[in-house]
Image 1 (cartoon, helix red, strand yellow):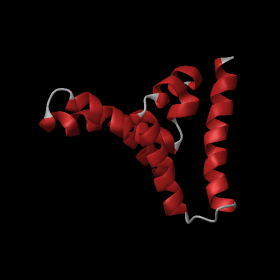
Image 2 (cartoon, helix red, strand yellow):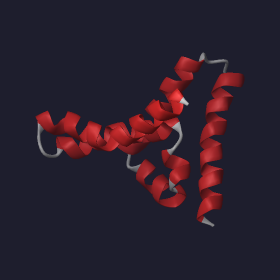
Image 3 (spheres, helix red, strand yellow):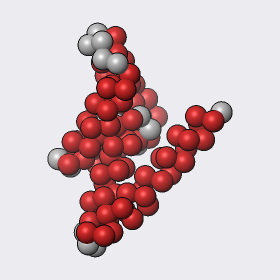
Length: 106
């Protein structure tokens, strides 16, 4: 059942992005910014953690997962002090960046 929920939640997130492109007529770069910011805002309110616990990879793979990993890393690193914020960002988001870069090369 986990796979079904991951598929449905990931599909709904991607459907939202496609809605922004086709119906709202946002340029693709603005759609990317909206998706990343929505992940950031949801993580700021503590809602994205629940979504990840429920949907797993269906919530972490789309662009909203990138926003989540950036802010979540900054919040974890910021707990140790101001200068550790970038450490936290790179620690959590580095795997996301690596796989996105690797996928872009293929």
